[in-house]
Image (tube, rainbow, N blue to C red):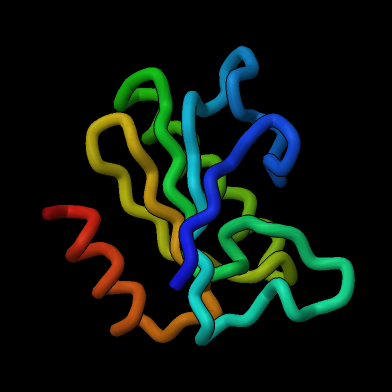
Length: 110
């Protein structure tokens, strides 16, 4: 696994440091997904997992709720597992098995 810090230059969502955006974030590149090997791919949750830190719990929860609402309304965009803890959102690629996502969640909760 490789951890990639999200900066203004590589933010796939263009939210870091912006109004109503996350304050810090990083991507966990998981070799079981291999997203960076695909043409035109960029870093993000599709690489395995992403953790976003928000100004407060309400903002983090709103982000997770928004993502799930969008994915439910447009299933062709894929799936992801989202977990909120305090002011942070753990986003795990839906390409991983539920048991693999649970391992991420367990580490995040500890």
